[in-house]
Image 1 (spheres, one colour):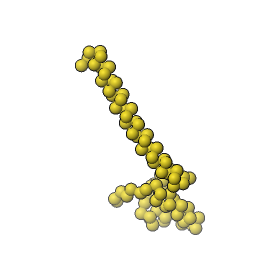
Image 2 (cartoon, helix red, strand yellow):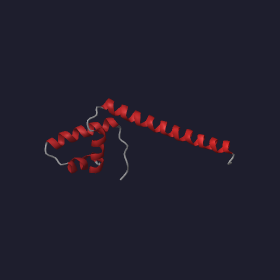
Image 3 (spheres, helix red, strand yellow):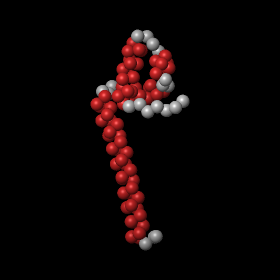
Image 4 (cartoon, helix red, strand yellow):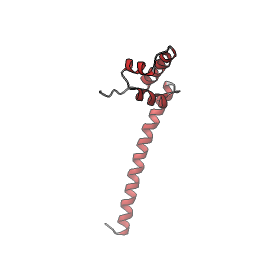
Length: 92
C-alpha cells in the first residue's frame, strides 16, 4: 500500500471523526477501513495527537523539526571537536 503523508490538521480531524464514529457504535476496524488506514496507524496517531488542537500540533511538528536540526548541528560540532583533538595530539 502506498504511503500517504497527512498533515497534522488532517490527522486531528480524522481522530475527531473517529471519536464520533466510535460513539455511534462503529468499531475501530470499520472506521479505519473506511479511511484506508491501518488500526496501528490509528492508535499511533491517537497516542501522538490525541488531545491536541490544530495549533498545538503545528507547534509540536515545528519543535520536532527544530530538535532534529539542533541534534544534527551538535553531532557535526562534536565530530569537528574530535578531529581537532586528534590533530593537536599529532595522531593524524
